[in-house]
Length: 485
Image (cartoon, rainbow, N blue to C red):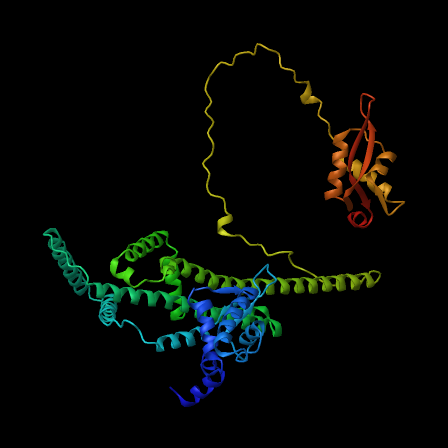
């Protein structure tokens, strides 16, 4: 421990500030009762203020009304300020009421104060067995010699076979009540420490999220450099020891089989006599659900970081598209200004409009020629006569004639609607000719099609009957038609 580092932590670390605060007993006892003991992550502002009012009322009954003169809301805002850092104040998505969450530093201070109390039972055997088990796991997990690992497994197998034989003979080695209570207390302590680890990991991701927001607000370089830097920070946390451990823990916890197994084990342990004598906290039965809730909070923090990056990319894309449109308009304006100044001769030359690329996968595979199976079979004459007149009554629309109609109409005006064009040059071939006009409007000539307005087009068919069609307003214009000429 470095002297200068401790001096800096004494001035800036929230946990140290909490321990050195004048009202530390009141603050630590309230935060422990509201957040740590019931294992609650977030509490709304009004609910937490009401709890603090009750807590202050009890203290005023014992020590007098002048000990803590400020209101509950004022204390909460003071504890959530940057100078204190004991509570985190935020607004959940879709809500207008502030919520409070205990910070990781405040939880560390509360855990240290809790450890100062006299423990009713101090177990050493279970922790010693845990040390042995951990050392065995490390040694077995890093052994490179296959023969040694096989020998170890065979040794375990022999011990298991001996234990099975002993049970079949009716000899059961049961744990003493002291051993049961000792291991249960160690399990409960480890389970609560996991919740504290979740809060610390969530704090790391929130710090990263705040840094990302500050970087985005003041960034003036390219978005690729910013993304590379941000993803580097995120990978640094995700690839760290705590990040990999959390990922493995989360994958294990998300397994439905593991959840059912853990629920069954907790229920069986809670029914044991030595455990009931301890009067354990009933919330331990659902401790794994508390782990899931705490893990989801951490996952939502990571999701907010991804959302912030996506919003930044969307804003950058909008700005780039706007800049592109400004450049295109500038080019068009300059082209219009130089429209009457045609240069003499060719001012530019392109050898080919595009490179000729032949990819290997574009080559067709060999296809064996089709051999028709022709057999000498007598064809029977059909009993009924088939009418083939319809094959010779097909209507052919002369597209060049319709295009000529459009160009003649545009010689005396800038634009003409389809209805006006049909009124001047009536339709001769019905719907087929009208459909050809629509095809020209979308492919061959310059036209505007307004889907919100309609027009009526009328003609007389071959039988002399009047026909009328309602279709979107189609207006043929002059600019691109002249270019085609």
